[in-house]
Image (cartoon, rainbow, N blue to C red):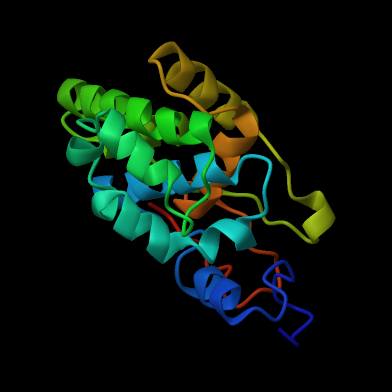
Length: 190
């Protein structure tokens, strides 16, 4: 990225730039895609988003296209298969957490009809537009991500601390943190 008016975090990485330009901050209401971001953001814990994004297609292949109903049924042999897959991040707790999160995700869908209805309640069904002037002004969490984290944990989800929830909210367009001069900063409203 050479334009100083754009968000600088994607740097010159073409995959990161495409993610920034086409996905990040765009309001998302598709349950399978929401689950994908929940999985990927959980794997990001302690790592860079770049690392996870560059393994995204491997994750998609390894985790049955992020199909929560299939992942919820994974047994010990599926867990071992994932632990042997060099294309993904092989973290025991995160893999087990993904299987647990798939079960919790399905329970939320059962209760709310869609995960979308449940998750967007934390922003009142609308995108929070932060109108940031600089990358240093970007928060790592918010009262909304705190509330989301608390409720997801109460429901048994793993790797859903407030910082991870905030990253999820950014990815799903629940918050718009594109910098004020960024051409992608459109006032997205859900």
